[in-house]
Amino acid sequence: VQLQASGGGLVQAGDFLRLSCATSGDTFRGHFVAWFRQAPGKEREFVASIRWNSGFTAYEDSVKGRFTISRDNAKNTVYLQMNSLKPEDTAVYYCAADRSVITSSQRDRRAYDHWGQGTQVTVSS
Image 1 (cartoon, helix red, strand yellow):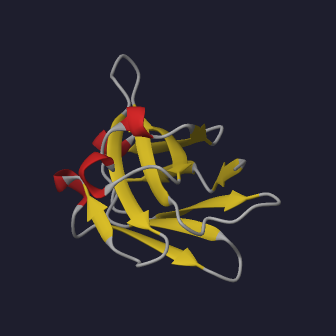
Image 2: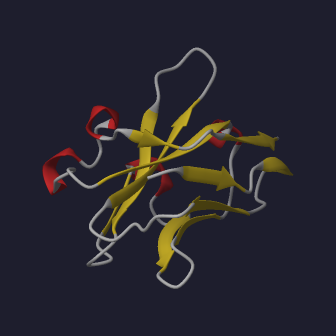
């Protein structure tokens, strides 16, 4: 599955952004789809995931209550709504998907074989 991430930008603290992750010529059916982020000098970390078929979601603790992951079946697109952004949210955000991910590994970047190109999110204070 080929992924296309978009929606990043430069915003101020407290603002919001919505990231999109779309497939081209494929479907997310049967996949886990996740967002990871990587700040300069840091490892890529889990942000949120959604199990396409059931809609079950998971979040990293620091984004709970601020970020929402959702899906649009008709558009084969996963969204990450990011509210109340903080400077520490600054990173390149990547979407990832894989059919073989299981619940216990959904937060592990090594479980995903398919990645989008990344979109930069910069939050100024």
